[in-house]
Image (cartoon, rainbow, N blue to C red):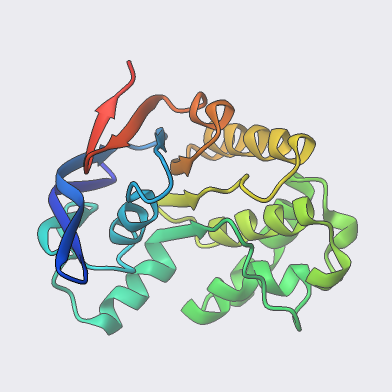
Length: 223
């Protein structure tokens, strides 16, 4: 088991009202597994992904990564864990505009101090997504689909246990969304990468080995 969330609760105060977005939620992620989570806007999908990725804390419950309870770790340890063991892909690519595609992919390795050994791997990953000829381009010189593929490669460079992708096709047209779906399939199959994806798209949701709806704060399996 790569990741486990146990009895996760999360509420938000809205004036005099309390909104419960996650209610005793449980989830496990195994090696080489794709999990897709669908739900309406405001259902808590992004909140759940942020908690799984240690970017947010549950009000109650525990998150385990590789069997280690990370819920109460100090922030400096969480930052190191995120960089080495969790990859993030967001709806907006969040590439650093002053750095090239190559440098953006390499950034997590630079932070963790293993830049030198990862340089050839960046070239291999760029070839993997047919963007080798774009390595020295700035994000502003790339298309939306290309920028998101670079963001996916950045999430992979430290070979994390799990990649968390929040609405990764939300800003893409149909053609580039299809490319992104194919890329996640390819990464999962060739790199045996575990991936958790939140999405509004039925087409994206269908790629999950396990597929869930997030409703009333709980995950409901779709078969």
